[in-house]
Each structure stands twice: as C-alpha cells, then as structure tokens.
Amino acid sequence: MDKNRKKEGLLERTAQVFDLPGEVVGLPRVELTGRGELRMENHRGILAYGQEEILVSGGKLLIRVRGSGLELKAMTGDELLITGTILSVELE
Image (tube, rainbow, N blue to C red; front, side, top):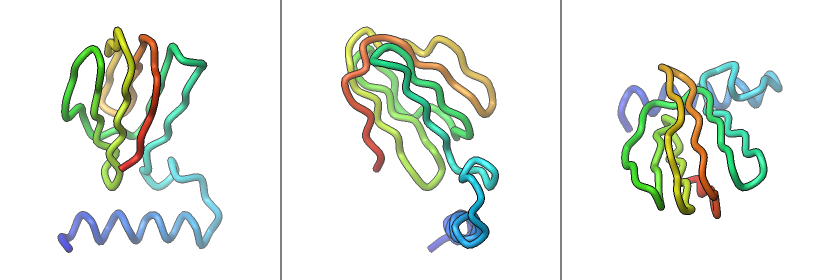
C-alpha cells in the first residue's frame, strides 16, 4: 500500500470516527439531479472521456458515469459538471 492510499484510508476513518461529512476530509461528493446533471466536488481528474462514458478519479474511488450525449460542461480544480442523459453512476 503506497503512502497516498494510507493517508486516504486514515482520512476516511477519521471522518467516520468524528462523524464528519466526507467532503470535509477530501472525499468526493457526487450530486445527481434527475437524469440530466451530475456535479462532483473533490475530484482528482478525468481518466476517460466519451459521449457514452466518463470515468472520474475520486482519489480512493473511481466514478464511472454512463449514458448518452454526455458532456463535461464545466470543470475547475476540485469541481466538475457533467450533463446529458445519465443512465448509471458506478463507484469502483
């Protein structure tokens, strides 16, 4: 296990012990509005991009968004917005 993975595990456990929201310690926060919009905070970048699938790094988690007409509408260093017809969101 590398140093970054150990740190992420410690942060996750700290959030659980102190009953803190995950986003306080840098865990990704995903908000889905209907089938047309997904917002994500605390991402670590786009790993794959296409109109039917977008793969986003959430640090310890991979977030796979599947659908049709998917588009990365906006992205900053820690937030992103995906639009289109979202059929599924998978956490790996």
